[in-house]
Image 1 (cartoon, rainbow, N blue to C red):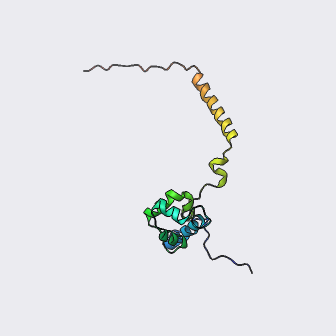
Image 2 (tube, rainbow, N blue to C red):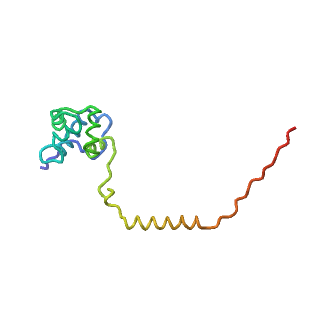
Image 3 (cartoon, one colour):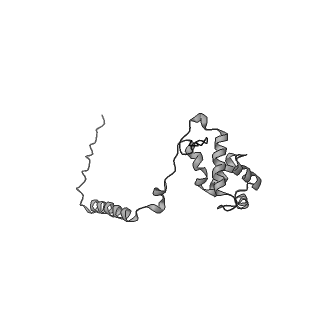
Length: 144
């Protein structure tokens, strides 16, 4: 028998009544555990030093036993970047750009060709002699 997960899927929007403080805490702690701690990109002490949030609170956020207030959440967001809030954003239907549309994956040769084509069109419009613009006649109205 195939075992199914009882955890909610994190890749789709939730109904408004399902967006609860507990769900926000769960999603945030899951993402923070991927980013902060031993062997991760950030150490607890490093994040604490830059954000001004004590290590004990950071560990509670990662464990899912506490959730930061808005001010602390914004400090974490500034330091850790938008990756920190991706799962929270997905709750209300915002889907982050996929890897194919990241800045490093732009087809530079195609972009250059398109830009050259558009610049050529602009140049042809600018160099084209323009027809004289008719000057509107100025009729004077007599006062009675």
